[in-house]
Image 1 (cartoon, rainbow, N blue to C red):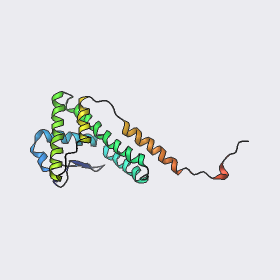
Image 2 (tube, rainbow, N blue to C red):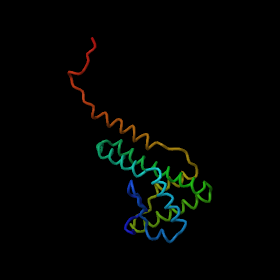
Image 3 (cartoon, rainbow, N blue to C red):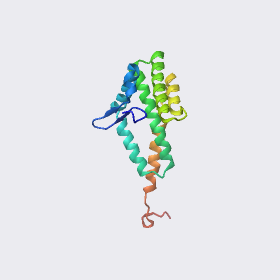
Length: 165
């Protein structure tokens, strides 16, 4: 489907991968995209994203949930990139080839939308390919925000308060 800007996976029980036609022209790019999307499927990232979206719908008013949501998405992509590189072989050549594949997709995405190239999340992902360290900041902030959001639904009645004399 050439109407979407990047490859996407949808479906929890029978996931499907949607690609653009230009990806089929480059064998290495196709391999990288398929391994990346299959990694998302293998680790149930789609289900976790749906859970995150449900929590975000419930606590839409909480700014910490919005921040945690963004960090969670970034962490999922970074972890997926790490797993892809482990599968392809964690060598400099593979890291460079995978980064070039990401650049091809970004270039195509931005050419079709006539936008200025925005590299922030992708640039961070490419820089992290140099040296990976485990980042669970998004997941930690998400769960802390979820815990704090649950506190807003605690109801205290005056007759249930125990007074200490």
